[in-house]
Picture 1 (cartoon, rainbow, N blue to C red):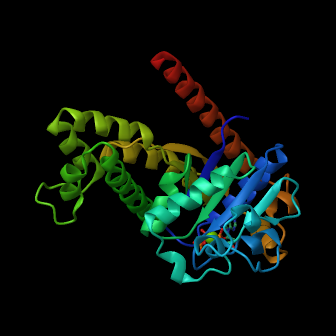
Picture 2: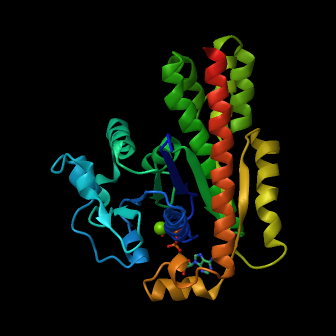
Length: 314
Ligand SMILES: Nc1ncnc2c1ncn2[C@@H]1O[C@H](COP(=O)(O)OP(=O)(O)OP(=O)(O)O)[C@@H](O)[C@H]1O
Ligand SMILES: [Mg+2]
């Protein structure tokens, strides 16, 4: 495998199953023969070690950030799953929750240099700059949502904030920072409050701004995983969110699949055994396998497209 992929799992609301999804997707990738690192970036609330049945780790992200351990490979904690290791955030309190963007980039480029095929990042709840920035720096951006109005509302907020933040960061590379920054302000006089209004406004400016916004729309591809699904009606929520995002935000997003609510999930947490190990053939794991296959398929298509584009550019 030539490329290394980073998957980030976010979604806005707390307690919806982000860590559950991160751990079990990580295990599925490892069971597929990939070398996988699970990175716990839920700063202040890290608990992946518990999901994996690993004792509270004594080294973690802050050791690298504060440069006491300059070699990031030293943070890797082996797990019982062959091919899967953990970078813990358990020891890290909220004091490192305010990372500078350069620190985040340094950390992610160090992660990319590690000997792994996949890096799966578990993010905290909310839409803090840290969470959104790590989400945006990933290659596959996964959002866990549950079919409840509060989670759906938080997911839309997460999407909006992520898109605005992406535009903010990338406008600099395009030399458009001075044009874009005033438009992104909450109290901007241009009536730009939603992604759709932002897209329309930038499009109307024409020239390089139009090229810029077109590129940003291609880049922004969050994927929704709907968790804790109980009824037939719940199953419609993911596709409905995709449609609403396109209609009201003008943004593309993918729906990757449903995961049923199942008693086995809680049991696996209480037993400190990941679901992929405790109940590998149950319904939630079958659904996670299909979600994992969907993401892998989309990545294969994306890299084929990028390869073709770079060949054409030569
Ligand atoms: N599909 C499911 N079926 C049943 N219970 C579930 C399911 N998914 C998650 N849960 C329950 O929800 C709880 C919270 O899950 P998890 O810790 O993964 O959420 P989270 O989004 O990571 O939360 P936080 O934002 O606090 O990190 C789990 O302890 C588990 O009991
Ligand atoms: Mg969590």
